Image 1 (cartoon, rainbow, N blue to C red):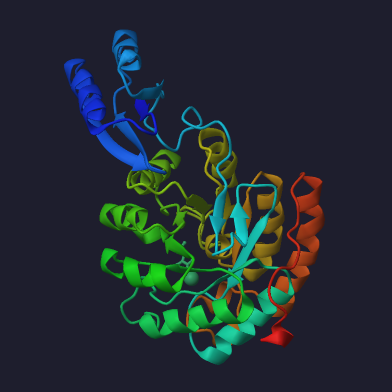
Image 2 (cartoon, protein in one colour):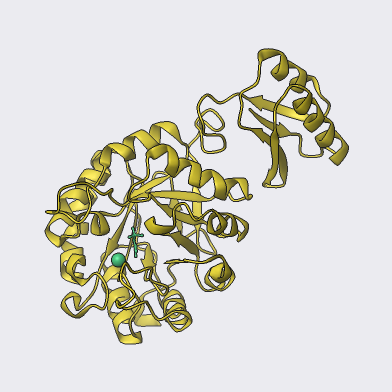
Length: 351
Ligand code: PEP
Ligand code: MN
């Protein structure tokens, strides 16, 4: 059950509703979103319990949600949520526009970032990516540039005027990553790092939440609940492939999860065809398929010198390949009734 209080409900009214829930045998957690207080219980409650809560002073509405989802569910919000990213909402996920985020897997140097940003901006990406903190499978692999990488990414934000997204791997880094970027990415390996989810939820920045490589759709949505329950409704889900037996692709891109997640939740869903397939020649067909099955956007690895990349070079597109993909993507995006964003970066010639 989700109880939403009226905007000017008092603390006493909230406590009294909490007491009614307890009397009905329901344990509720309180949270606030957009300054509106809510009480959420895991159990649905009997019709009598719902009626008792509905009558209580200060209560605006009571929503009974079947299953395990609460704030992420379509029952709570039938309308698609629009997640605005950037100081002026330069990128909007979940609206009519199809949003393409692109850039290298890892930030490596000023020259590498400038070359990648130029390439992706020229072809119409509306956000730039680049990892500064890299959660690598092997401790001997390049671990990212850390704070110095964040600064290089922020430089591209100023240069291009486009919002940037980067991964945060530990709660202690949330504050500095939130300061230097427009959106926090939580990677597949951290999807169930609950302290990190809570810290990202409290940061005030939109969150790009990747699906755990062995997570069910339900677990993925419950991870999003952690972020939302911490007061942050700006969550974008990202399908990035799940582990299967077949090694001919890096992971198995689960596009059915995109359509299913769109049915279950009002949150936007994007697809990462790079980390899922791990093969540059599969990025184009999977991008077109993602746009066709209702994804709200894409996250694509692009590196101007992919052969010499320090991280995931074997799956990155070159700037030229990315340009070809974007030209082929536009008619598919438009055919499924979405709009292609107008170029919105500052002219690179001016900066
Ligand atoms: C990434 O996008 O840089 C990344 C590490 O992705 P994932 O968490 O999906 O492996
Ligand atoms: Mn990567």
